Amino acid sequence: MRNVAIAGVGFTKVGEPWERSVKELFAEAAVAAMKDSGSPAVEALYVANMSGGHLQHQLHLGAMMAEAIGKPGIFATRVEAGQASGGVAFHEGVQAVASGRCDSVLVGGVEKMSDMLPECVASSQATAEDQEYVAFTGVTKTGLSAILHRMYTERFDVKPEDVAMFAVRGHDNAVGCAHAQYPFKLSIERVMASPMEADPIHVMECSAVCDGAAAILLRPAEEVGDCVEVAATEVATDAFSIAQRGDPLTLGAVRRAAEKACASAGVSLGDMDVLEVMDDTTIDGVLCLEGLGFAKRGEGAAFVAAGGTSREGEMPTNTFGGLKARGNPLGATGVYQVAEVVLQLRGAAGPSQVKDARIGMAQSMGGVGSTCSVTILRRG
Image (tube, rainbow, N blue to C red; front, top):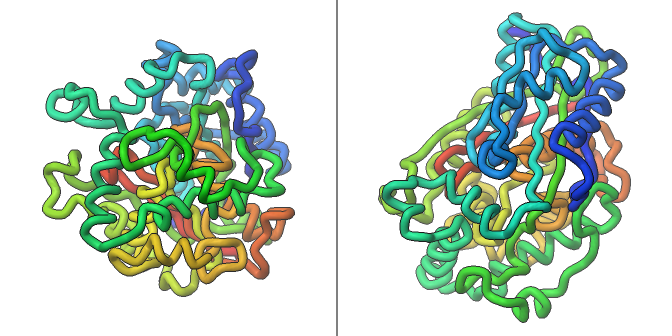
């Protein structure tokens, strides 16, 4: 297997550009990644998208996006794994280059939600859950996370304010990030005073509806020179529904993917300089920190509240704002996460830069822990 390098990255500003189509957003990010790499060569394309079939009634995005970027005729396919779509697409792209099947692979993610009715977006997100036994009840993705939030605070005697601090830290980190949806500070008082989205989760503890696209160009490391390399990428799954798990607060897929990735890369969690985790709600962010092993069970919220995830903290996490502040364009989110780790390791993160970052991890999650991807990158 060959070593794989990140040759180029590109992304759009996350926001609500109603006037722009899915194809336009994807093409902007893809062209930026090719320009960043110094070459437009692309042999294969993996398009991460979660909701195109539901919201735009558009599938077959592989061929569509290949044409949109001027590459009709190449291998192209859509990858879907809920909100883990971007991370799983990246995993597949890496395998294509590492195996020697392709020398230049573009992995892109795109999602467009802002011009859709809220109920359509909510029902789209619910498609990541079991339709026959879970979604038919009317429970939303945030509603399922709310169940875990209540279990967590009661079992470990944690204050809801400490869980909500994940949103505050994300907004702190987003300040100065040009591509973030909400690059401003957010006080804990404002979070706790916001309306309930799904009791006990407040609106300001959730990522918002948005549009965005991100892309990464992969090539063999020996062809790129001084670069950021893929040290490991792993994907794991868990019981599909939280009701089927022995302990709903244990994210088994997250733990397994992280352990396999660290073993494959030959590194430990203590070697990480930057971290990107899934925080579409604050409790998801806390549980992912614990699932990965960066905080002990029941102590993740306290770790965040004490400043452990700030840019200057013990484990700088979501240094561009994460899903809450940078934004969460679903299928594209995992690609944004990897691209942001690349910027950190290049020393090109601007105001978001973590000093001397050499190794970083990106973790994305589909459903409530049903699928997890973990990627470890290192500066070559």
